[in-house]
Image 1 (cartoon, rainbow, N blue to C red):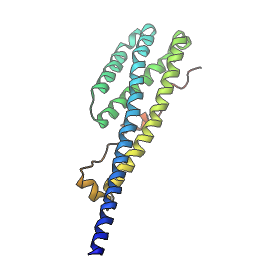
Image 2: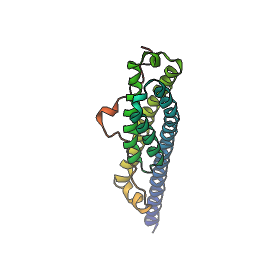
Image 3: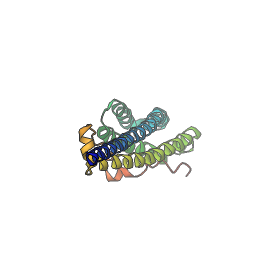
Image 4: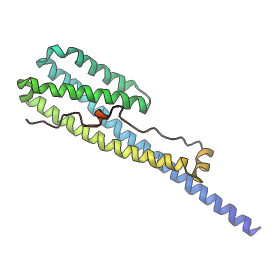
Length: 184
């Protein structure tokens, strides 16, 4: 009887420890996503300023400006991390294109407000990159724990689910959106 009680107590303690680790990993993922979300909002707040700055110098780029605005709205309305990742990849590419336009417009390239905007975009892009790495690491830890035996027994019992990675769709989009040449 004593051996049975000891074994049951050990199983219970193990279950509590595993459950608490799973909760900690899940909360780390949620917190990391919140950090990414804040940076995406910062990027989204900079986009109208970028559109306005480029609009004054490159009127013929109206299709690109419209696309950037539409992608921004689509990202803000997306619910799934996978969808947000895809839209944000396209958005980063279009922002990269808009910033590259500065090379064709010397007045735009020399505009102090545009240069400050480039610096802000570079900072945001770098922060998103770091936040994405941290988030994906937290997701990896949670998903590994959920899929690993014997932790998977507790995970299934309490309906823990794997989290999605925040990935880029296009290998070319893995680069920072070319805004780090603020002063040429």
